Image 1 (cartoon, rainbow, N blue to C red):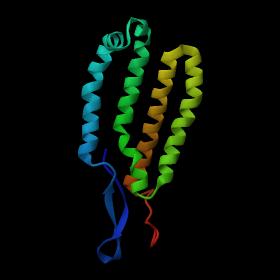
Image 2: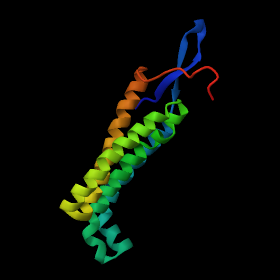
Image 3: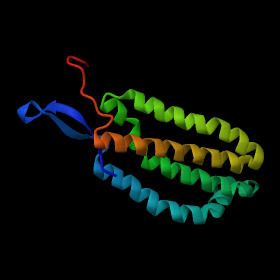
Image 4: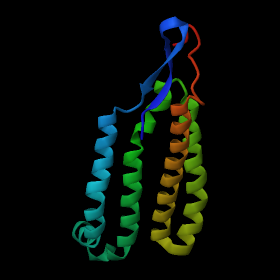
Length: 157
């Protein structure tokens, strides 16, 4: 994904100049690589990992652990979103994305948890992580196209 862009300094001819903001491309590529390389073997090894690390009594939680691992990978890939909104002077974007995640997580954890127990609760965490990722994808596309960018007020900190 291309880095987000925002209005920054005045460029040549008194025209606003767009600058890249957010995580460095190398950081995002590293997060993507870790998710792509580590996740598949972790999912395959999850039954062994659960039995070895937690004990035989937790073997039924293997599917929940797999769902949590996928949710963690989604969160890793979108980790750059924690600092971006503050960096570009738009902290409301972070609040909005967190609100979407919470709005999905709370009812989903109740409904899915009641239907499928711990695996359902893990599925709710994954659903909320995906909702957060989709929200930030939309925000990033709008920022990249300049639709959500705005210049900082003169003298603003």
